[in-house]
Image (cartoon, rainbow over all chains, first blue to last red; front, side, top):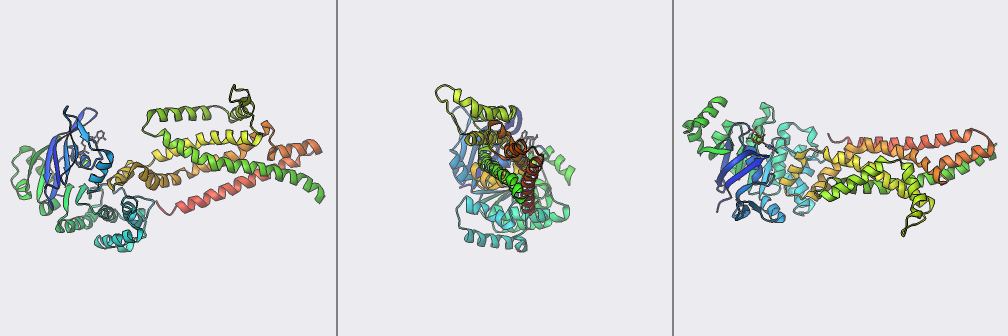
Amino acid sequence: MKMLKATNIYKQFNRLEVLKGISLEVNKGEVIAIIGPSGSGKSTFLRCLNHLEIIDKGVIEIEGETMVSDDDDGQSQYVPEKEVRRICKKMGMVFQNFNLFPHQTVLENIIEAPVIVNKTNKEEAAAIADELLHKVGLTEKKASYPSQLSGGQKQRVAIARALAMKPDIMLFDEPTSALDPELTGEVLKVMRQLAEEHMTMLVVTHEMGFAREVAHRVIFMDDGEIVEEGPPQKIFGSPSHERTKAFLNQIL
Amino acid sequence: MMEYMSRIIVPILNGTGVTLQLFFITILLSIPLGLILALAKISKFKFLRDMTGIYIWLLRGTPLLLQLFFVYFGLPFIPVIGIRLGRFTAAAIAFILNYAAYFAEIFRAGIQSIDRGQYEGAKALGMTYWQTMRRIVLPQMVKRVLPPVSNETITLVKDTALVYAIGLGELLRAAKQIVNRDAITSPFIVAAVFYLAMTFVITQIFKKLEQIYAVYE
Ligand SMILES: Nc1ncnc2c1ncn2[C@@H]1O[C@H](COP(=O)(O)OP(=O)(O)OP(=O)(O)O)[C@@H](O)[C@H]1O
Ligand SMILES: [Mg+2]
């Protein structure tokens, strides 16, 4: 069984076609880096996977469960909202801008969803939060508010917060793009560690070093399509498409 | 002398009691009602949004005094339901309905000022719309609306004097009666001091609230 299977995803924003038939299968424990020029639809694709965007057409299955599929007229049909929410809970997401809750402390941010959504009792949730904070190296920031943290610390809290829901798949949308260059390392380190623990990860990134060293597979997207995909050595070493070459030349 | 002072102060204190009652009942009921209206105004049901829009337009677009007259003098003449309300009840209803419309707009603007990322962060964690509202959006909204709510609250203290017009014995009316009775000016000054004291306390309370909310951001 695939952890995630997206088939022929189409999405447009007021007639602007942003995804033009994207298909992707992800195995358990696989780390996938999605690269591509700005505006190519990378974020949109990731956001479609956990229902932050509604797709126009296509099929999304998470761990064998269908979240959305085409009906007979080729229109996308989502399963009922409650089901969508249950299926999406298998995925955690980390955003470029963190989206931490500013009115809650670090600890409160992390236990919020376990307590409110999963009805875990507070002590238990706090114990799990402690472990996660230890893991991301922020134990001493437990009582701080997000505004008192650096960007790198915020992003590590955001990762811990997503992990607190015990997802099977983690989606990262340019997790280091909003950070000062000297702060990206601490976030990438946590992500590497997650990869070593065999977390299934989809990472939209401009960090080619990370893609090269950590990803099992690199997807190159351009203009709403997957132009090329393959192991990092292949994509970075001998890309077969002109567009991939042009993109890599430009950024490397 | 002492005795004369008390002949001024006692009626004014009684009037203040009525003013405070009207103030508290209005705040206590118009804030929750305003919140419900704000949520209705941004609901996904167009009908609900439109109805709330019309309500807010009517109540903010006409004088409070007119609304007060309507509830007290106007309602009895409406066929079938025509009811005659007591002065205080009529005043309270007019004030609550009117202030709820103002609070609704303040809350709506506050809710809509919350970054979309907050909803997305919450949704990605599996929270429902109402969980997101209750736990994430509204608590942050409270902080942002404190200054305009403080303004409205101070305005309310002074607006209570409008009920003079339907003969409810509040602070200003009490002062005016003594002025007429004794042909002196000082009751107005005393009344002014009472209003100032009330607005001062409110200002202090909101200052304190803003300090409490200053712990984050
Ligand atoms: N909510 C929206 N409404 C309208 N257009 C949108 C919306 N979201 C994205 N778009 C458009 O869709 C296209 C793809 O955007 P997307 O954010 O997916 O690109 P991206 O590959 O993530 O780019 P970047 O590297 O800059 O993050 C862009 O042209 C963008 O302007
Ligand atoms: Mg993007």
